[in-house]
Image 1: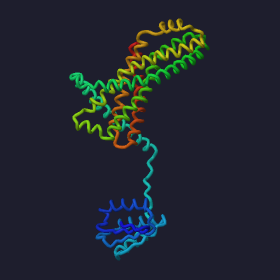
Image 2: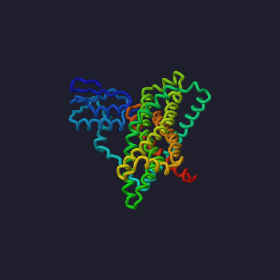
Image 3: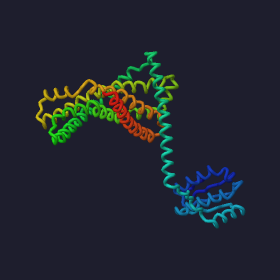
Length: 370
């Protein structure tokens, strides 16, 4: 192509048969999208050695699109055979757009179900492989404790635990107050408002405290794990680690998983206490119950396993959140859009799996009578 102000000259050369037409077609499509400042375009066909109907159709299509944009198109050095092909294309007119036959709704639904099932299967298989790799890394670290990265472990404990403490305390305090207020209003209709304390203690210590904390951590720390590892992969830092002989599992994954498994039970304990405090303040205001009576009622309503159930579930939920977040980070391809998509996906999957895991634990503890 030669450009001269508003004039553009395209010199076609070589084999323009359908077998070799794909790169030429891409260039002509790019020209139709952005012709620049050209007002007059000359297409010189002198150097073409082979020319067929497909090439004529591509040139005619390009000229038609450019003319609709107000660009004057002129052909030069067109042979008699090429003219005949152009005449044939003009006589047939522009091709009708292809409309694939619409499938019945039931087939579309079955297709979507099949695609989703296959995607879930592939994701499950990939996740199992990633969990296995982490377990192998953990076993290797137990055999050789010198491989453990203490500084990243402490750093991630601070980021996922201490830095999240204000948010966890505030939300669990408010949720505890709301549960106490709603429970007192409903139980008052039956003259059983004194059991509001039992409601707060059992709900928070068994379910709400842990579940709310896990969701906060999934949205906060799980997304951070994905974004950090994804950004490192996008900048090829993970490949540089492997080149230097460093295992990304040792450096990036294991410290995050262990830090979250230690941190989430501690956050759950604090969340339980703050929920009970929030509920206690509301109970004192609405039911005129003194703090001493409230504490005594909590002690009567709560057994060891009422408190222990939440703490037992916490490390498992922490492992799920960390593993999902780290694997999503390693799944980032090479763009900022991929980092955002994987971060969103990791948060959604983490919260979904946390709720599923909580339901499974609830059924298990109910079955064993705890």
